[in-house]
Image 1 (tube, one colour):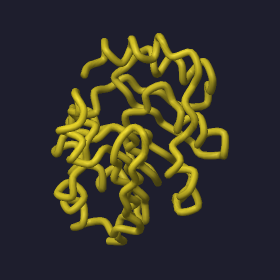
Image 2 (cartoon, rainbow, N blue to C red):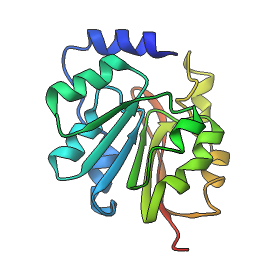
Image 3 (cartoon, rainbow, N blue to C red):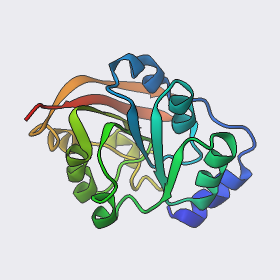
Length: 181
């Protein structure tokens, strides 16, 4: 899937999607006031977090999605970027929280995430389980496996992890906290 595909999706989406349920459930565990929403799409989580008081930076490779965010919430900082470009991602700054919702970057970018978090920072992720590779087409960057979560454990502690199954498929949901150094 690429920017052209997602520009088309967001261009044709009439109603915005509500924020991720897991984010709403776990918002009390977020830290500080800044959020980096990676793969923000058309902003369902960025806009929600901004409305409840967070300073949000939304990154996506879809110009259409980012434009929709700005139409609704001019306070959200939007950045047009391919999150799989770890060189560019490493320059984005540091944040109290990172949200990865229905988008998982390549392994090199995943390894950068702890470096983008401030001390005690929180990483919230929701993505399809690996089993969905056999059940859905076009799952690149939509899957999180245990090995990717395990790769973060050197610098982060798992606060919560579970798996849910709904009409869209099987999802892994995880909340991690950066260790104090």
